[in-house]
Amino acid sequence: MKRSILIHPDPRLKKVCAEVPDMSDDLRSLADDMLETMYDAPGIGLAAPQIGILDRMIVLDCAKTDNGEDARPLVMVNPRIVAGSDERNIYEEGCLSIPDQYAEVERPKIVDVEWMDLNGALQRETFDGLWATCVQHEIDHLDGKLFIDHLKPLKRQMITRKMVKLKKELARERG
Ligand code: ZN
Image (cartoon, rainbow, N blue to C red):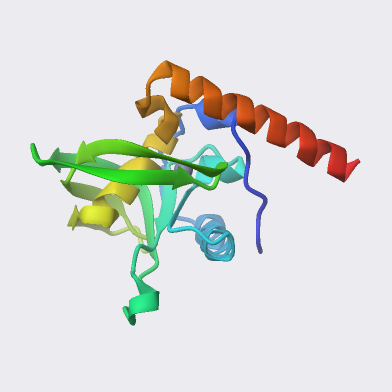
């Protein structure tokens, strides 16, 4: 089932999310919903707080399916960065909770991530390039942090003002 995505500013997007104690069918069904919502948007990553669920869970798929790569939906429960490269990378980031706004963010180019999969097994993998940026962006969400929090205050305030305006417009449309 597709869920609706919260738009910044929203207090739920600023919360530190809770560790998931163990795997459950509810969590597996939430993962399905998150993937459906992400692909539908369309986006390459989604964190549970973006649909108002304050649990440490993210989904992502950065495969370039336009270039013939196979889709690679990943679901990560309690993900954490265990190591990051000194080498940094700059990507123009966007966010499904901050529609149509993009800005360059600098992050470690390569990261090692540990997480629990949907079978409750511990996984560890090294991510590079867009995958590394995306996984860091999504884990930030679990700590109440948005990509605009990496920007200078002036730029962040400008984007936030645009989002406040957008939310007013959306609320009017919904009557
Ligand atoms: Zn985001």
